[in-house]
Structure formats: C-alpha cells, structure tokens
Image (cartoon, rainbow, N blue to C red):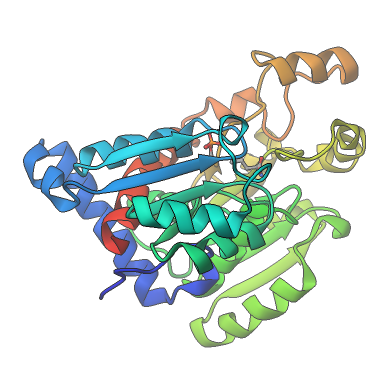
Length: 329
Ligand code: CP
Ligand code: NVA
C-alpha cells in the first residue's frame, strides 16, 4: 500500500483497504511508541517540516499533530490565521503555493470543506483535514482504532449516533461505517438526519460492503448497539442563538443511564470531545444559568462510567494522526 503524496481530506476518498492499512499502521506506531522505540520513530520523517493552520480552536487535534510531528523527527509550525495573512491579505490558493514551497505537508482546520480542497489542489504537498464543517476524517481513524481495540473488529459493529447528525462528525462516521461494513444508526428527530445526498452515496457503498444504514427517531433503535456515539449539539462556528432549539429537540436524545441500559451492557460510550457533561466549563455554566441543565449531550454519570472509552479515543488521535503523516509524506 502506497499513500505517499496523498492528501487526507475526506473518509470518502479512501477505500476500505486503505483505511485498514492506516489503522494497522496506527497500531504499529502506537506499539512502537509504547515500547520506547524513540529513535526508530525519529527516523520515519526526519528533517521534514509541516505547517498547521487552525482557523478554529483545538486541543486534541493540534496537540496530536504537534506531538506526532516531534515523535517522527519533524518540525511543526503553528499558524494562527489572526496572526498571519491567510484570508485577509492572501487567498487560499496563494497561501497554498507559498506553504507548499516551504513545507512537506500542511494541516488545515476551518469552516468550508472547499477551502481544504482548494489548499490541496494548489499546495503540491499532502494536505490533512483537521476538521471542517462537513467532515472530521482524522477523528474517524482514532474512533475506529479504539473500536478495534475494544471489540477486535469493525465489520458488523453497530454504532448508533445520537443527536445532530448533519455536521462533520456524523457525516464522517456514517461514511466510515459504510466503507468498513458496519451498522450505522442515526437516532434523532428526522430533521437532524444526515444530508440526503451523502446518505445516497453511503447507501451505494453499503451495497458493496454489507454495511447497514438506519435512521430512526425511536429511542429503541439503540437496543443492542455496540457503541453509542454523540457530539456537541452546537458546533464551532454556529451561532449561539441555535442552542434553544437544539436543546428542545435533542434533550430526549441525550445519552443518559436509560439510553445505555436500553442499549445493553456490551455497549461502549464514545464522544470525539470536548463534551458538555457537567457545569465545569464556561459554556456549561452559561447553559445551566439559562436552561437549568447540568449536562447536555451526555450525562456526567455516563461520561464517568466504565462503559465510556472517550479517553482511549482521545489518545488514539495521536497515533492515527501520526500514521496519516508518516504514510503520506
Ligand atoms: N475531537 C477534536 O477534534 O478535539 P479538538 O477540537 O480539541 O481538536
Ligand atoms: N462537531 C464538533 C466537533 C468538535 C471536534 C464541532 O465541529 O465543533
């Protein structure tokens, strides 16, 4: 398998074999790091330079790219658009051609998917999508590595996504599940189901891989699920004004003890994080003051339970992002 020179923009751009290769490579790099084989990792991309552009905030993705670059013997430059020319004085196409002359690879987190596509079209070096409104492909690799570690396989695993499935996380999870022959359920009010065009594309893939895609507003859809997955109800870049409607519509789909009980003891809870599970955050405090809710998409009880594997997922961001860079550079 040779992915040298490829960008990593959407899960949909990769075959099941390529995704399996990236997951196997992630596991290898994880084992290598745990075994303390520092010098082996350092040689993998020694002397290379990568640029990391973040138009939205980040903890996991930025830290994973920076730590992975250091582990691989690379130097990473963090670009905060408010302190660079990007967008204001220089177009994406020009920025891409400049950075492509200086760096071996570029990570981009921002708003429209078309921006990361444009960067990739002009840069002449691999571009990695660190999240757009439409997709979050590196997160899916971490999630699938985590599922493989806990269940030993992906094929046939039933992942049920609760909440707003129209944004980056559910889009990418549904695509990943379709490619890897899994069962994907979107459990939410109908207006929160994923984009129809993407559903049609994924259904075509599912016909070949044996995946099952299901859309239901009935909470019983969680029964027997291996994984209950959720994400914030309001994503980065969305206006604060949408909170009220989201809370009203999605509170019945909050991942709480009842949902986990309906799913069964085999079920694990996953979340890309950050999560609003208590009032220990600025947003959590504001929501509590305004709506009297101590938790949003997941209760603290579920988040802190032994069924939650969210920190395994977070750790796997590092190993999978490392694999994406090392495979494509
Ligand atoms: N899951 C995720 O992408 O986290 P960050 O926003 O902290 O990067
Ligand atoms: N849907 C969330 C994912 C964060 C990792 C957002 O875009 O804010």
